[in-house]
Image 1: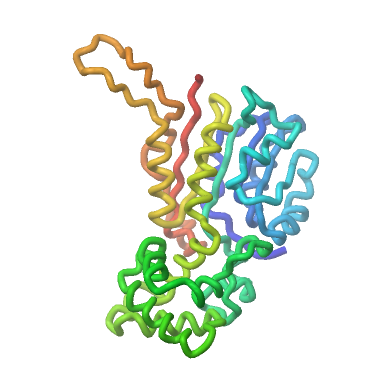
Image 2: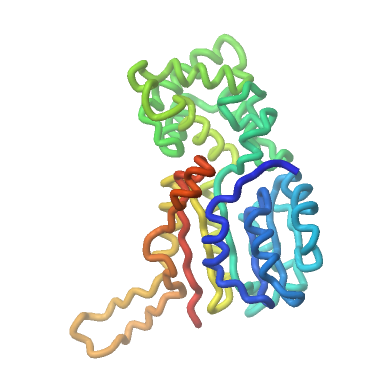
Amino acid sequence: MFHHITVLREEAVDGLAIKPDGIYVDCTLGGAGHSELIASRLGPGGRLIAFDQDDWAHENARVRLAPYLDRVTLVRSNFRYLQEQLMLLPEVPKKNGVPQVDGILFDLGVSSPQLDEAERGFSYNHDAPLDMRMDRESELTAHEVVNTWDEKELARILFVYGEEKFSRQIARAIVKKRAEGDISTTGELAELVKSGIPAAARRTGGHPAKRSFQALRIAVNDELGAEEEALEQAVACTAPGGRISVITFHSLEDRICKQLFAGHLARCTCPPDFPQCVCGNKGVLKLVTRKPVLPSEEELEANPRSRSAKLRVAEKLDA
């Protein structure tokens, strides 16, 4: 079993308001920290459905969730296929052809074990083959992105996904280097990124390759596209009174969640002098957390990787 510290564990699960006989979905099984807590709060009539596309997550879960496996269904899939996969499960009720569950949790981004396993190629701290695939059966790798995508597109993803202000210089350095031969390891890439950032800027803000590695990981796994698709499906698949609990780790993820929730809130468009609402725009969600929940000082001290985490929770309204 690998070592993994679950971020905002209690807060995210508390946000779901677990019913012992409810059906809950953990879209990001990972180290199974959230799944374990959800399962522990379920009675014999409850059910946890846990998604992950990574084999190690399932292997670990069979050990960590062993006391609760009678109430757990493991699904090996990207969460962007949430509705499709739930439709296949007989234990999930359907309404008008749409599966209905009592709560859905997302813990987005890369998990600590993926970062810490050098051979996965996620980390600038370990020299390893350029990979970064969360699903090791998928075709696109960081090696392909770095060595075949054109300079303009590389600069775009570094700027948009990594919020890297020196994206053009870094892309130029990558393209110049690969003309001499393949860029094949994380160590080579980290040095190239460093060379594209002015010396003064390299001395502040943590490791100079952090933003670029984040951008490549997001591109390889289409993380933002998957998040947007899955959250829309989660709104549809959550039964009235059920909740959606979402942990994000950077501003792009959080913005997608915030805007998607906002788009489903009730927004009356009637003129202010109307005595009562007649527009019928009731919305389908209400916010449980008006502002995102942040890690406590104790959690930040115990797990520095939690420092950028934000939790948002919304509840499905009656139709």
